[in-house]
Amino acid sequence: MRQPGGTETVVFLPASVFVKQPSTAAAALPRGKVWISAGLTEYPAISTNFPQFVLQAEGVNPVFLLAQVTWGATSAAPLGTRQVDGGEAQGFQVQVDLSTAAARATGPTAAAFSTAIAYELQALGANAPGTQIQFQSMRVWVDSAERVVELEASPPGSGIGTTTMTVKSFGTPVHVSMPPQRLIVDISSLTPGGERENNGGGDSDGA
Image 1 (cartoon, rainbow, N blue to C red):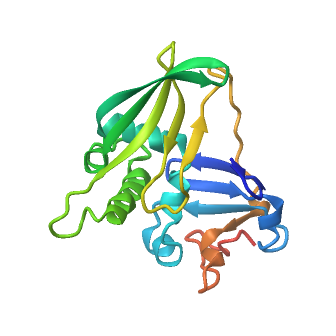
Image 2: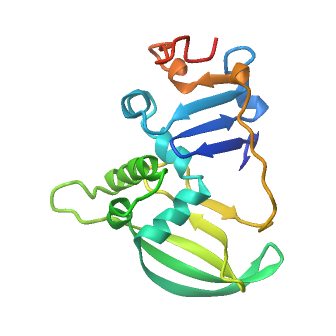
Image 3: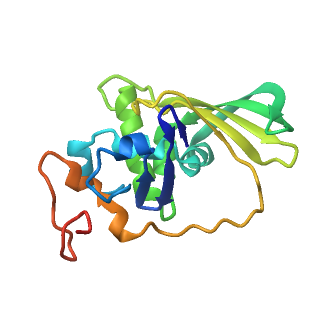
C-alpha cells in the first residue's frame, strides 16, 4: 500500500494480519522488529487499546470489500466507462446493506469480517434506537472479462478516508511467506499495559 510516509506491506490471514510499516514509522518499534502482528478476532485485547484497528486493517483488504459486495449488495447504478490500468472498465455505484452482509458472512474470514462490519454499523449509528442507517456505497469497476479491476470505498468509522484498490496481473502465481518470528512484534505488547504472555508461553513479541 502506498502511504504518505512510504510503502506499507500487509499480509492478510483469515483471522490475523501482519503489517510492515514504512521505515519512518518502524523506528518507533522495539529494536530489531519491523513487522507488527495482530489477531483480528481477539476482541478484548484489540478493541480496548486499538478500537479502530480491526476495521482499519480490513478496510484496506480487497477481499473484505469484495466480500461485502458479494454478501450485501442491493443495487448497482452504472457510472460509464473509463481506463483502468490500460484497459476499459465499466463502473458501478453499488449500495451494500451491511447488516445483510454480516448475516451472510461465511468461510474462514467470517469472524474477522463480521467484526469489522459491526464496527461500520456502529459508526453509522445503525444500533441506536430508532435508526436504520446500515448502508455504504462503493464504486466497483469491471473489465470486459467481467473481473473486478478496481474498488473505491470509504469504510465508515475507519478513519482511513477513501481507499482505491486496483487489481491486476490476473493468473500470475503469488508466493507469500510468513515474516520471520524474530522480526515480529505483537500489537498487544505495544499497549499501555505492556507485554502479555502468549498461550503457548513466551512474550508476545517473540522475545
